[in-house]
Amino acid sequence: MAEKPDNARMEKFFNNAGPQIPKDHYTLDPLQRVNLEELQNLIDQKRYFVLHAPRQTGKTTALYALMRHYNAGTQYRCVYVNVEPAQALREQSDKVSFVCASLLAAAAEMHLKDGQLQAAFNVWRKEAGAAEAESAVDWFGRSIRFLSQNDPQHPNNPRPLLLLIDEIDALIGDGLITILRQLRAGYADRPHAFAQSLILCGVRDVRDYRIHSSANKEIITGGSAFNVKVKSIRLGNFSQAEMNALYDQHTAETGQVFTPEARELAWQYTEGQPWLVNALAYEVTFEMRENRDRSRTISAELMREAKERLVLSRAVHLERQGLG
Image 1 (cartoon, one colour):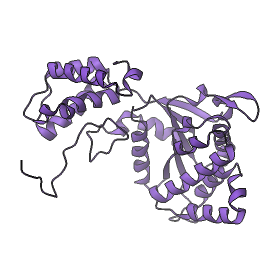
Image 2: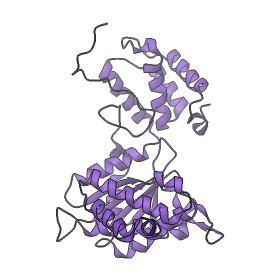
Image 3: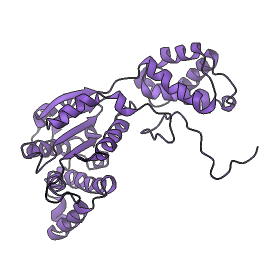
Image 4: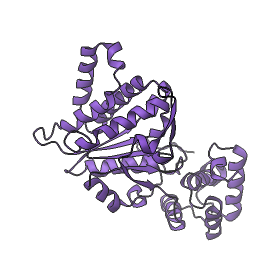
């Protein structure tokens, strides 16, 4: 087989791990999967709200799309930050806050090309001394205030900040409580000294959190620790039309056809759950090596075989989704 030239474009594929990368993966427009008009109203009203859904449903992909959407405009600045790395510190609330602040500084530099918070963060650490700095519990809120008040493009009239916090429910105990309370404490100062609007993203709605506080020796609900939340939005599954549109992208890219019977079986097996839709299609079009011959039609028989192969592989999400 002849080698592909160095500039040959890699064929897209169905993504079964992590956020969507449109240049690599068959992707439905994430902004079509959320009610952008509803989100816009909440943001304009300076609301704080929750986006939640099971794992591998497209939450992070949607957040990245929202960030790109708002940063392409001129009205807002938008930063996405994933706080999951702070989970390792468990209930050490001071260190959790410190790490979340550090993550936010890095995210602002990456997504906004704004290194002011990172520079300020380094100065604060130096002034306080490493040990004292890491023991301050208000690091995260302090960093949000700084970022809200300092806009390198508009220093005299900073654009309001939109903050998207992913994997919030990876945090536990007093570490989670301190982050939620810092967000609540800054709410009254928005938009000039805190984030105008904020999305907390996780697997569950924050109102369902039952957080054990080691410091207070009690159970604290997420609703009481973060009672400024106005709404919860759940990211749903694909519709059958959306699943078919995703599979159509593969046909348009490669010429390989899914029969109507194969598509109907895929819908029965997945009911539109995004990870299952992609995993099943990836199995039948890529893992089943003979089907990499794009002249082969994906039939109902091949789709059944792909489903059985997924079940036998004991893929990590199958039990959660009910296919296994």
